[in-house]
Length: 422
Image 1 (cartoon, helix red, strand yellow):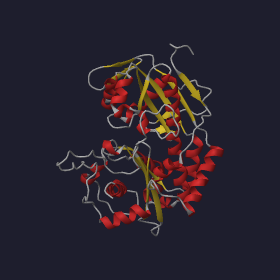
Image 2: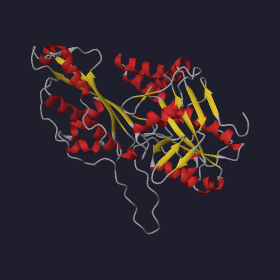
Image 3: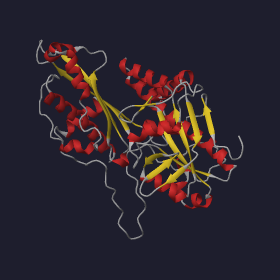
Image 4: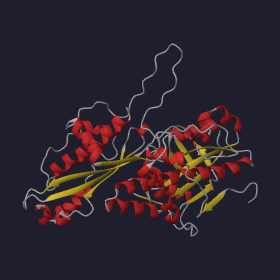
């Protein structure tokens, strides 16, 4: 590669390391907590499983042209992206170029985690699922190191990465960025990335990002918000310009220290605290503990599953169970609902005894799958949602299905609102 050649790197077998402290952070443990007993066993198991079966990869290429226009628009090789946060970051640093990056922990991890859930092993599911997220973070750190290594010899500085779904960058632009990165035709990368209609990536343990490049090193050194090192946990990096300062994986607000004599500012929470729900708070608390599986991803977006157990209104009241899958965007963006799905719980066939299923199985299941209330709206709007009030335990009528969606979303809201204010 000549001095003026554009960077392009692909690694189907990248070297990386998931730091134990980072894995514990993603699991939700305090910084100094030491795993013992069952938790340590599960942690070691997840790490060992991935070492044997995981297929991580990453790809990076330098864009030939980057242009900033007024407002929030960034044109990369003629493709317009819109993010005020990324635009301001590039402008503030005087960026002249950018590197487009894709990383993935591989499909095997996701498939195994799903199998574990369906086999009734939620603990194994959770530890492997979170380890997949930790792999993505470690791959981003490894890619950052390679970029810093390349940039250092060219008197360039690498800016912090930014991705669709982060604050001020709509997740719908995932597809545009993926096409711009140019993964098609890369036979050396066995597993690529597909973008779903919701903007989510498949496999979900993947990430698309833009790293700005600037020749103005003095601006990066002066403005700590432009130093990627504060978000990079890579140990022993010889290109580090600032200490790692990433906060614990908590759902709490971060506020700056007040001026002397001034009252401490109170950050506006993204969710209404002590809200009025359609059911009692004690019930939501119990459901959050017993029926909700939730974890925070590397960008503070949240994935959750909620189980509803009901009965048919005919055929002697047969028990049935449905599973709700919910994903909301990052906390700073107000937990916007980015994906919803409802389907019979794995292994349950009680729904086949519902009268509407017996009358029109295909039509009923199509209606259930198509219902995605409040998709694209902040989670807080569930509090004012005038939904159906059907209280039947079955899924035959739309008002009853709306009522159950409300319960699932309210349980997630309660769990996040209370986690934010521990």
